[in-house]
Length: 269
Image 1 (spheres, rainbow, N blue to C red):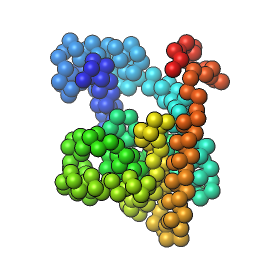
Image 2 (cartoon, rainbow, N blue to C red):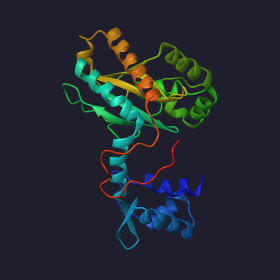
Image 3 (cartoon, rainbow, N blue to C red):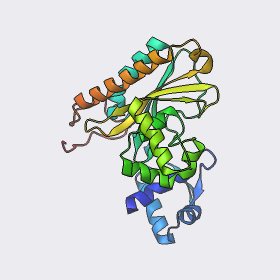
Image 4 (cartoon, one colour):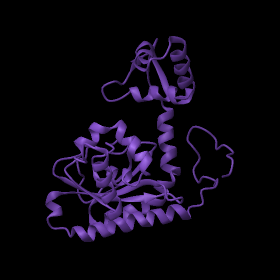
């Protein structure tokens, strides 16, 4: 792992049960030498990603909040997808979420609540299981075979718990079926009593970028035309993919400056 990756791995130590961590705990948890660990911590503090609460004790810093604001304004997936999922949620009354991925991590990037606010476990920003749930499964089903094999080898138990099989060939065939049908449906895999219907979203080069998913209760599913809903979700995914391809991703002046720093001159793609 690069030094950048190693330093950023410190941020992954924080969570609901661990809001502040000592420098000693950081170095021990990640196996850093003391000088290396302290250097990474100093760099993260300087960048605003960590803040010192007390001597030797650190918490996540306010720069993360600023980055959250920035991604809400500039993320191409949100720019292309938000109007589509807002329209779909309004038309169906269902919660419609946009899911993105980075590397082998999958996360909800936007929740568009429907007529009822569903108590879903994996809201915006919380990492999702790789194989459980329609939103994740439709993404990994579109991974190239070699990449999918590597992912499976690293997460065999998770694949087994998702009932995809205990052998690579079984998992591959199951996900290949999902890929060919172009959508995924899950029943209570993440939250008991709720159903997810998802379709993929692709980048301009054909790489799977994320997914769009409608979530509804089993009670509402009983009075819903699942085939029609599946068609609408697939259409939404296709529409977002087209909008992504049409986006002008070159540097554009922002209509609203960052609240903490002036716009920087960026190199055009």
